[in-house]
Image (cartoon, rainbow, N blue to C red; front, side):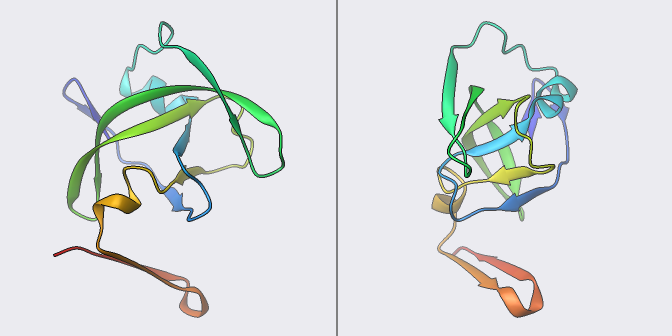
Length: 110
């Protein structure tokens, strides 16, 4: 992710069940994002609960492909890892292949 000349490399799970990408609030802090004035939203997570998030558009680079993505940040993401969802991430690739037995993911674009 990049914001105003600052770049941050972060790990995230590719989640075909998530619509938005959601990252821990610490990632926003490390990037220097000023999101306190952004509108609060609430997202439903896998256990059915609602968590508060801040939704921000910013450049992301995944597997050498750079795009603008809407990314949610929350300090209530209590799963221990960041998530890459379908919106603006999956849409940037022609194919996403999950090889579960080998614990691999292949991202393809033409």
